[in-house]
Image (cartoon, rainbow, N blue to C red):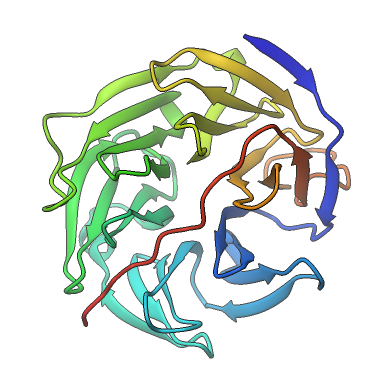
Length: 292
């Protein structure tokens, strides 16, 4: 395992409270500021543009196939479709039916066109979070419960393996997925377990070589793991709370969202989007192939 203090550049000095959910979609980088409910895009030739602002927290989005500028979103207490003008059309709000005040968190579409998103209780109650799958017909299914802060779903290119972080308890889970039905094959297994002094796993992505990249909340670092679980590399970044990672599909560049939330004396890099040179590339975000 190697460690590197890299020369990270501030790509967007947004002073975001809790930027997260960075994805490369349709030739642009999109990300959210969760607590303010805002969705942004960043193109190579322009600064950030706000695409939508909701009156509820916005955890993450994925593009909707064949519907330009439409997004499926993990937002508020459920899953919604966001029209090009940002108007939400709710598919379901499953967290309205839970005993604790809760919200949706990170989410991603898989290669088969389903959308997966996690939830958490506002007070961080242990075991109160869940993982949901939104199928192409718009049905929202609870796939896992007993999580605390479900974060960073990330899929391998063939869609048969999903990685999922439970940030609050410091674990990275690996789940086998039937790419046809979307059902989990067996129970989740522990891919990685982090000590408290190593930080907490947050947003994740899989690179072109099948390795897993993990933003390490509280540690000011990004980790890269081999599929067999070996820690290959640690990159130090100039912000204590990196929240999501996105590898550019056409350039050797890593984009990292960060948070000011929970930082006593935030520097300019806290709450910014950072760019880091790396040796591998990623893939563009998958779309939700909804029929509703």
